[in-house]
Image (tube, rainbow, N blue to C red):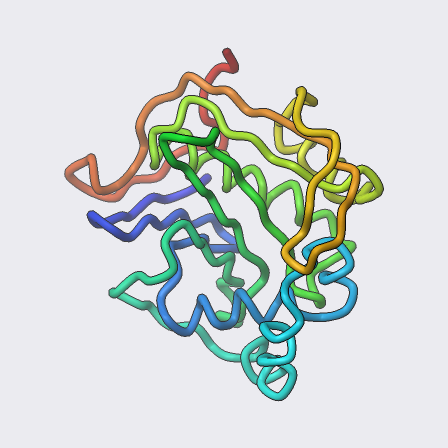
Length: 208
């Protein structure tokens, strides 16, 4: 089961174990810190100055207790937070513009990898994209060699699709890309569009 409780700029989905919500200042910093370790950067390839900027604060941010943040920042960023200890588990980023097709990306914090949580991360990301942001389709790209990410996307309901064969990461590395697509017809469950928060069963509609 999941509960949705949104405002005009803040999207929130809760399950018994996790909450995923639009990032505030501290959850955005924690979400970025969760992707700055060497293993994550093998796939993400962020600029080196950004990664170095988190070296001294990474552990502190990963262990930060993230309370409610009423003022969202970081457009398109959503933090996955452990409801038991209120610490960052991972993040989803959704980008959408009129000139490009909408895309979703995401990753887990180091201590939550290898536990099968990637599928849950992308499942909640699909719900945000389709039933909160109103996007009829969303695309995800990953390096061909990133088996864990590919499996997580498939388990979350994405299907392989066409896309650019090569992708240049922010640090300049070129990698072979594999693409996935989610297209969904579903009820709008965004709490902002409904009069009160309510519980929903996990599962967001029919594929198109």
